[in-house]
Amino acid sequence: MINKILIFAAGVVIGSAVTWKLVKDKYKKLADEEIASVKEVWSKKHPTVEDITEACVKEGMDVDITVQPKQTHVDYAERKTAREIILENKYSDKEEEDYMDKYVISPEEYGESELPSESLTYWADGIVTDEANCVMDEDDIEETIGSDALNHFGEYEDDSVFVRNETLDKEYEILMDTRRFSDVYPTR
Image (tube, rainbow, N blue to C red):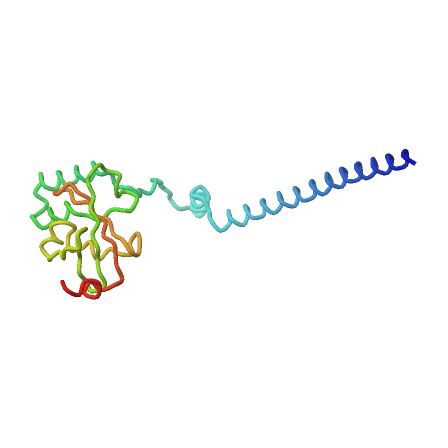
């Protein structure tokens, strides 16, 4: 009796192992075929530079393609060099010089330099306040972030803009508040 139970158990174990191996191999083959199919479709939808070049050559077109990586980050030192060149060659007047000193940067660039930073708030009624919630007038705004900075909401993030001011050696984070300043601080 024990002999029959052991033989039955061995048969179950061997049968399970064989079934597991066959199923594993079958689904691995299906997955590999699916991956190959996706790669083929992807390559047809997104040709490489080599594919385009080859097609152009077959059509008898002259091809001179130089692929350069997309620049996503402007180096702080490079901006300073460009500014110096502009000023040395007198390509700029005072207004453009001021513009070059205050410019919008990406959220990733904010805080990369060792410049001190300050957070400002841009309220729904168009008022800009500093960290102490003191209202900034147009001259203050122009001196710190420049008048154009407030037009850049949504460029990187919907509710914030980041500005580097090289004249003041400071970075500014401008956060949008959907409330009206006059509703939050009615006595000011």
